[in-house]
Image (tube, rainbow, N blue to C red; front, side, top):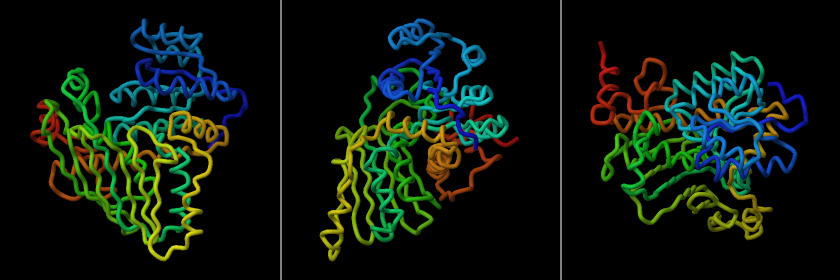
Length: 382
């Protein structure tokens, strides 16, 4: 994989200039720009007024409503996608064909078929550029510390895991036309809300082997689910639960992993610091060992800036970023399997969903009671 040949700042284009671009990506880009790692040279949005306002605020020289024209004229090294998931495939492929790396907001894209098309564009490009997903929870100092200890076997075998994203969204939230719809949001809380905690769980626990899911639409007038649960078996033999909800007034994001020698817990909402982690040793673990486990070092919160810094370092070194390729697909495959299991009432194993499977091309799989009528007709056998 080819590194970025120069140590000059990565010329960066921001595509989509709405809320997430302003609240998370622009501050991260400004931090990396101050460090000499990036230079934001273009802003693109289908809404020309929004693009111009964003560019004026951030002092970005090139403004456009046309991504293809921007790619041809500006030739950015890195394209940051802050757009809805329905256009992620098209925009990622265009950027890769232009030789640019891609950093794409979650959800990554609406289906495994879309993800694999992006991977094919990476291979066809021949430049070494790849697409990666915004999974910033992997990149805080707390996750790095716990992941290292788990990989080293310090806690013994992982045995039981729990992953909880229980948030609250009211009717006004879903009054926005694109929310709660398969085609525009990509899925319900399993895809659009809980994906960060699910991704972190899989990053810490390692590969999954089987999932048994359940989903319901209990409150909101939406196409997707508003709550889901899953039982998961990992390839290391551990078992776990995953719960995703937008019906929970007492909001919390939580991961707990019980190992032979310790319980590791993370409790936060939208981002964590070192203080949000707790390690409880099993009886008989020496106090000096427990004290070393609890020494997380310098505090780097989970954030877009933490991941962007790691991504730029990987691009410069010619390394695969952890949330690209197989490292990003694993999480989308798990979520797809959760939906398939929930809608078919059968367990789904890793690797089961591929071309020809209706869930490969749409998370609703054409299921009665879940898929829009037109999608059910398309998925019906001839």
